[in-house]
Length: 130
Image (cartoon, rainbow, N blue to C red; front, side):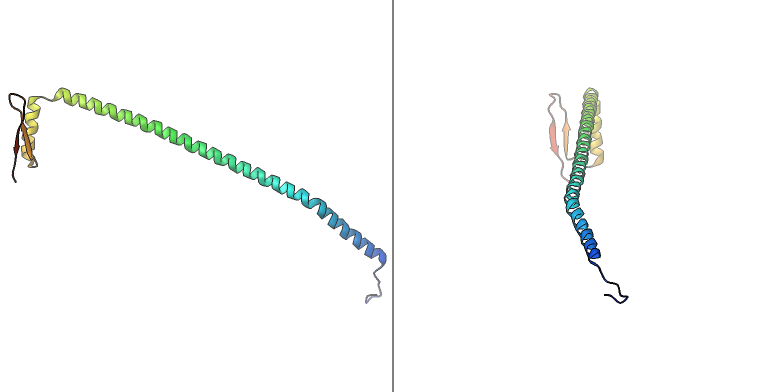
């Protein structure tokens, strides 16, 4: 008996035991299902992450390819420019231009070796002492 004169009856104990058994039974049934569900969600998350990583790698590879193509095009353009400049220079070098460069070299004071063309087109080398 408790203070108010109420007693816990056998029926109440049986009801309490049944409720406890139901809770334990539901937990035993639900825990494996939850573990499977949890692993399934984890697997889907890993699959999505792998797909994103693959897409990132594909985008990076495409960017590197585009960069390489543009760099190659720039190199070709630069080579064409150099070839054109060389053609212009080779067509425009005259004896007057060589004489002009000779005089210009004398004026800047940094000329150490002077090449003077002769009649046989062989240079005369002269070293300057400072």
